[in-house]
Length: 228
Image (cartoon, rainbow, N blue to C red):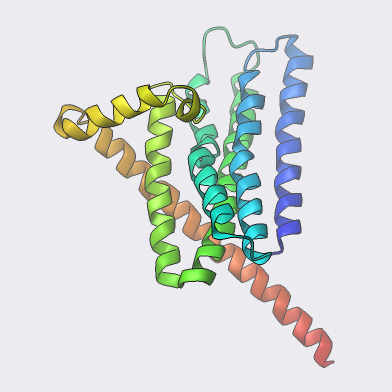
């Protein structure tokens, strides 16, 4: 799968999400859940930084550029799978659309967020593996999923976001310090994050295998076409 194909597919999925939201507004006359459009826009940030990282690596830019893009990618990566957690708003008393429609809409947004996150991770994984080897690539991927799970916890449970790293760094530092100095004081944290890590890694492994299989199939067809 080429980068162009990947981006085109993700754009199409995002368009479906926005179309469902627009249809909901038209049917109900209510613009509730507008935040989902903003969350979808935020989900695209890690993909943008992953593309910049890929470009900087292929263009042989200074290492500082790659480090910057990688850091920004990791900081905003939780915004993509975070869309899955928006299902907590299903069935809220003020919802004006049928539950089945909201389930379809939230499902589309969540799936698209996951795919955007996995797509960006796939690009970064390729860069790291190409530079440092497969073992480092997979280790970095697992670490990124662990940190992403922490980021989702910060967003959904503590109601923080990636921008707070710039606007309220003292608050984030204080929270991290409290969690590290009193690890047993938050027993709900570990099964939540552990479960998310397993789910995210399992989903990415499936995405990785499927993407590689699709790319290999295209390569085999191309070689077969040339040999005819």
